[in-house]
Length: 176
Image (cartoon, rainbow, N blue to C red; front, top):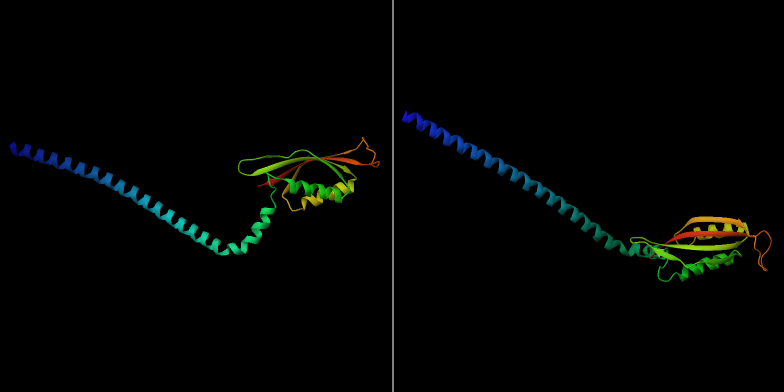
């Protein structure tokens, strides 16, 4: 009976050690899988970083070619701190079409993209107002007409002719 107990004890120890070995192997195997995934993710980050670095270097080499276009693009934006140039453009264009213009103070807003809202009124004939619209849309600034209301001008001042229209504009411009 003593030898039978020894066999059971040795068998129990062997099974226990086998279970411990299997559990440790599973934990080690899971750790190896986790670390290999981290390694692959790190390698992908390195590849992406190298690609970005190459793109930046290529852009630096070609910057001289892009510079004139970048300056032109910069001129498309209204200066939000000093919109005088844009206001002069509107006034000059309106005068070129024989229109009288009244403008409210512009307001600029936006966190990522600064936009400016301009409210102004024109008085003149329909062909002139239509020509003005085409001119500002094709002009040197990024402009979007948000609302336009054209009505017959019932209040004629002394220098205005009969049949004059009043146009109420709300335009939005991109600013820097």
